[in-house]
Length: 403
Image (cartoon, rainbow, N blue to C red; front, top):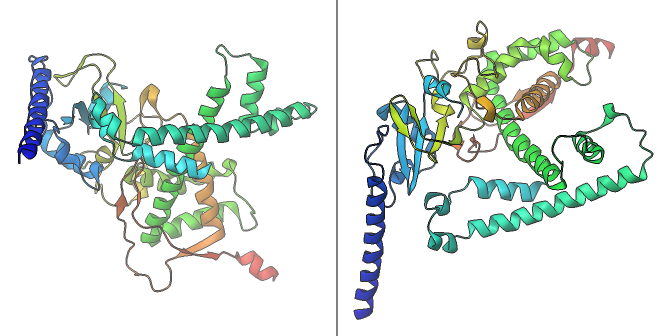
């Protein structure tokens, strides 16, 4: 009995100490005017409001109640959520190991909520697993670099620069030492990791949502396929980036997919200095989440925002260069996604080839009305269930006559 009393006393004392620390932290900035937000509890703050399977939707709903600039306290971490195009415009604020790394980065981690607690850091295994995963990734990348360097050393150096891939370009620049900053092997490895991590999961996710929306909307699918096949003819083997400019409707389809299903629904930033936005104080070090998901489905900017309608991009100048902050699937400002054009080109080319060469249908026995469009939250918002379709090779009229 005495043991239980002692344990309860220690636990109560610990909670009381944390509560007093929380109180003192608030008193350090008594005159700061913070944006509105939901009620908070000691220690956990606003965490109970956002815990769930779909934080991006929960945060969007909270923003509707509390305004376009909302304050959350996730544990001990102050966080501002921007859910308005106007506010966003005010300030520019391989494969297994890669998959494990992405899973660790996107999963829930107590260290992110209580970063100053050594006890939480010691008890949590995520950081140790991330370090091990990082070490394995670095080992794989080092082997690839060594192999490519050996091949370059054994060659005669007569290879045209037009035939170089990205890794060969980086290794050549490293050998020439012609840049203003040293291009180290570590930097090349980091670029490779970013290319794989940023260019595989997000691109595959966008393509999966694109096919889901097109199969769900037969009229849009028919229109996109007719455009691709009529413009490019019946004897194309492969469609390249040069052909994409001739396919305006397909480009509108991809924009609409990115509006409804932005690759990164909550774009993270951090305030480098104290600043004032919309009359509210934002303290240095505050986490900022730009809620791209909420902005993209806001009825103030979009007519029938939940409807898949590529034609909405037909008579406007909205593009990926952030002329309009209502449409920011790749972020904005100097921190905009550096692989944006690479990703867009990849999606354009892949989708065009899929629509050109195949007719797409639901699996036999599947519901004929619509797909289950449920989501699974992570760094990217993927389909909850894998997309399964039947691909039927397309044979043009000319090829049928030749037979």
